[in-house]
Image (tube, rainbow, N blue to C red):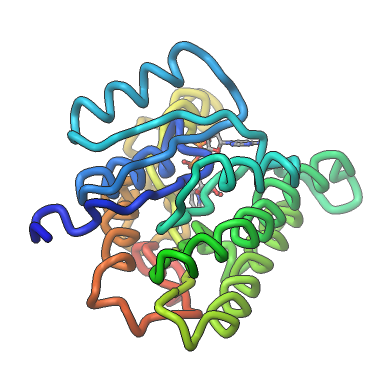
Length: 261
Ligand code: NAD
């Protein structure tokens, strides 16, 4: 097996991967030689063009498959229809910020479904495939909020803590097999959704871009630097490498020191 393409012949499914961290992880795995399934709940020409572009850029086989991670049957179908799944990255996620007593019930249900329950459904569908092929990696993109809390993020923090708990259970259930399950816990990452908030925050706070980033967005991130999608992708690729064969049931923080505070 060529060392520069260690995941050649493996199939990786990355949920919620038509932007941001998911796309960064998909790119990192494709560059390692994996065939990649991109996913989101939309089915636009842009989604399919993204897959074609990533295939051209990396030389990997890249497909886009629509599946709504808020729906259990679509979570399972995404995996089952992919035919093979060696690497499963549960990344799809949404956020809503409100005090508990004002938190809309439908937002709570959607966040728990997309950020947590989807990982249960996709993993349940993927494990038999991993067992058949004799090798598997489940990587859950949790968050610093899977380990610590912030006010007004009840659903997100609960769901991300739930994902960390699920990670440990899957690791124990697969401990005697060549399958691992871990959670990556990013701090504030510079994704398009975060980038788009900067001009509004500059206006709201009357601050320069660098002030908004350091004093508002990265208030709790001691490094005062955003995490990049490449750093998160590289961490997932490491968890798929032989060096990580005995790493299972744990969390890896990529958060500039947030959880050391
Ligand atoms: P993003 O909004 O760019 O990505 C979210 C992805 O999930 C998108 O591809 C979106 O299409 C997809 N998605 C949303 N609802 C879906 C659904 N119902 N079905 C399928 N796909 C769906 O945001 P991101 O920052 O890249 O976040 C990716 C993951 O990383 C999330 O789980 C998020 O909680 C986590 N995370 C992000 C940060 C950060 O600062 N950006 C920090 C820690 C953890």
